[in-house]
Length: 592
Image 1: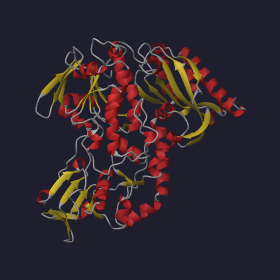
Image 2 (image 1 turned 180 degrees about the vertical axis):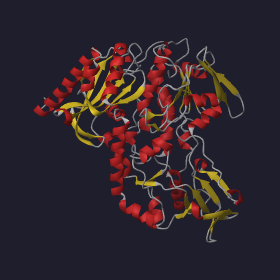
Image 3 (image 1 turned 90 degrees about the vertical axis):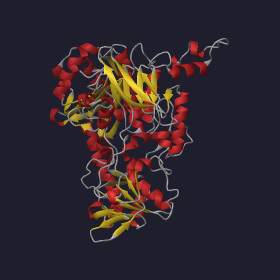
Image 4 (image 1 turned 30 degrees about the vertical axis):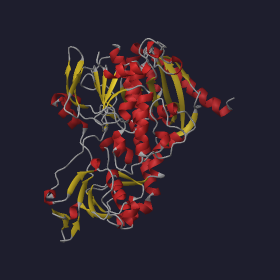
């Protein structure tokens, strides 16, 4: 039985939701406005708007809500304490926030949300909404085939005279008699998660990947690679990692899991199939998508939707580096580096001091080579423990993964920035000794990094390093360090500094990042499509969402999903629901 404090918290949340529902039912903007703090935010994931959107400020929120209620018929708002009680928490840098999970119904289907209340000092301390999330849980009449809705039917029948399950799976994956409704380009965590969600919604989905084997996009990375965040944050949809898995997952173990996941979840997956271009027929609402095999063979499919799941870091960026053509040794991008095998005793210059550059340097040093990092710009350095894990403390809580994901998705941009600003301050405090030692060695720390590594990732896809030992090697002088500005010219056998010193090199590795997705889209689909879409990835400060991610774009039938394992797991759900809604005629396929 709940104690008195718990009962009062629950009662406060229930009272606010009752007022909220009454105001919604009457489309009463004035009452809605009075329920929100001056600094307030409403984020909607499809439930009220069929969009992924954030609105800030009580007046704007009230107007947006009042304008949507007639269309969505949201009602029956009630607190849900099944998994997490109404409680006081610290979120977004604010203490003593009343946080409640709630449920509601809408015309499209059931919804779930997160409410956060704070006292309004300008209005007698009344509890008002600071942040509200409303999220569509499922589409009425188009529920996922999971749990009590497990699939049955012909494909699972005991027909001794006909094809069995395996025969039917092979037929389904061959697409000899039909086209997929959705083509997903890329078979990493983004593509697998999106395909799993769509498949459970009954959407005929095909993944294509240019690699030879499912999981090769991780399997082929450098030999020593291990994930930098912990296992409990990184589950794929529906199928969590086994409980005996290590805290940090090795890349080959992860790659094998991807292969098993595609099989277990019955995902249609073509390996060695590269998406090389396409065109959209506006009248038919279909793409003509060209797929190319390594032998030059081609296959054309005509899906209604294409999902680009090629990650934030897809095509290597190979910048023009003045005088590098003078160097006569091996030049390669870090994306093609696999191991230090055969490099014992060799000298290697690594241009770039992000995570890839550091990890390659550590791998080389550990296997007897002599690496030197070349720093081009200030870099954020964060110890992998505990600093790099600070953003994931929510995932240590004793609640279900689904509730954790809901809470993670509920934080709008502005409070999220404040939370990460405070985490960045804390990580700098925790790592002060290391940062000071690095600067004494001449390493340039990015002191302008106000919001921490996650915002760097979400805005530029890099610019930081999780220290798993390479920073200590730099401090100890075991991994060399020079500044790019100190290089006068590259010469046949290395880099010559301004003082005439030559840093010898047998190999130059360019840890210089990856090209933007906009460039990829222009190459594959043309400049008109790229211009229609605009920026992909990176925060849009006005919209308070990541540009064109997991939402309708300016190009009908074209979608993007990328990011961390957690981001892909969370937003694959809403991507899948939107595509299903488009296919069922519940919303248009492109952004209005």
